[in-house]
Length: 265
Image (cartoon, rainbow, N blue to C red):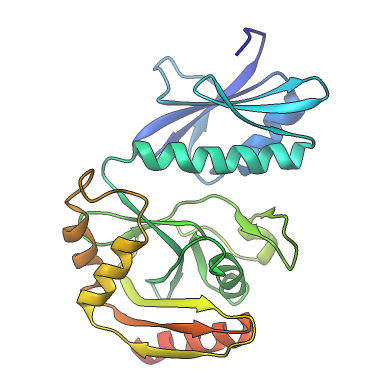
């Protein structure tokens, strides 16, 4: 990466500091809006950052760098912010020490976390968005972060929504009249539902052991890298009602999930 004048801010993100740099004030303002906006930040830091995100102008495009290595180009500022959000996701997951990530949508309802584990394109984000619009607090639409006591911490990035388009859009919870959860929450319900375009709501209760295996299948970490995950996830599911199945329309799915959570209060 070529040396050039830049401006920056620093995010205190879980177990590390993230420096965010650009050669444009407008670009830096956009990054400040979308990169983990609920986490503390400062103008500069005397301590070295564990992760360095840079978005720099390159021949009428915007180049995105992580730790000095270019990872992608973008044609617009919004696309650059989207690329930076995704790049930071991958970098953060590799640096986590105290928390273990699970690919899952996650919200807080009635002071307990609801987890919706699933792979990419499983419909997690649209379901989280629908639940947020109905009063839930946002934990994540990508990674649920589980601590050693089994509680879920917020991964407070924007939602990445497609809204029927192949292109993702960054949406902040405030746009859905919701907010990020401010505290870690114990898990009350786990609902692993795969989206079936022509399908309908069809779930069955699963055991805690099956739920642990489901979470293990949806973590980006290998077991050899973090063998303690089994203990983390066992505590995570211990007090939860656990289900798996399929869903169709997101509105119907949200209705049914709210019924489940209401019944388990």
